[in-house]
Length: 188
Image 1 (tube, rainbow, N blue to C red):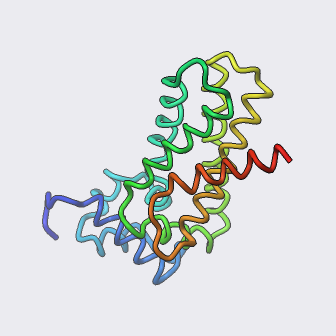
Image 2 (image 1 turned 60 degrees about the horizontal axis):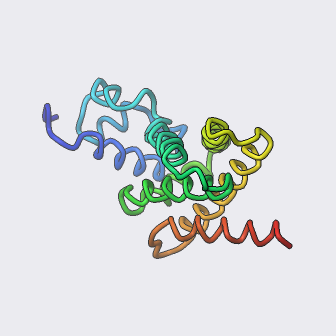
């Protein structure tokens, strides 16, 4: 094992995804991941608190993008428009992930009920962040809640389309398209 070799975090993520696909999430240990990545267990824990965090790393950054986007929008932005823009910016942040990561991550989560529950909790946390950010803009609680839930639904639908696509491009137009479809459904 080489000490201090750069790129340990990326190697840990790649090793974890490979092992989760080969053995399953439950059957993969932190030691397995560290060994495959060519690092020590201690190095693993410098980057991640546990093996689940490999899949959910970056959630706090997404929340920050959502909150910052809403805070920086002009006052004339509607609650639904603010939510749509916030989730589009979160989608842009996910576009920066390594190619294939979202699809591989989703496949692991789909095979494990506890991870599915964690994913739902992540989405609920994103919705709450948007609702609270809208509330800080003076949006009525019920309206803020509805706008946040619409945004979360559009994000989830767009994300599913993105990972289902064999040659995914940007997530942003899929999230914007899902939000437009939701507005159309609501208007009908």
